[in-house]
Image (cartoon, rainbow, N blue to C red; front, side, top):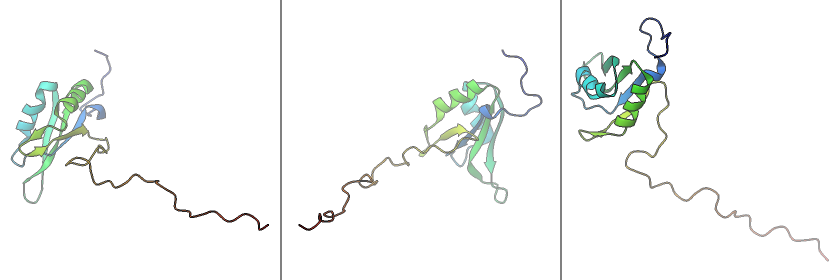
Length: 126
């Protein structure tokens, strides 16, 4: 491969995925199992609520290689799982502004339409 990777275990932002929509019971190990087929995983964590210890139903998966991360996004984003839908994207990336869940509809008429200006001012009197 290309030499000169980042030193230490700083995760390359292009490798670090946010994974939302996890089932409440899912643990870090299951998350790792689910994503490991896409590449070598460096770190993997399901985020828990500090007070209750309950899963907050999202986590992070960091691959060693940006290709793995891209494959995982392609392979896992919008996957239905236990009645929920996984969101997989680069951690730093903004949320997809795709259609909201439950499909489109309800957007009303497009803006613009007829300008209601009424008749213009009359010409000069004769």
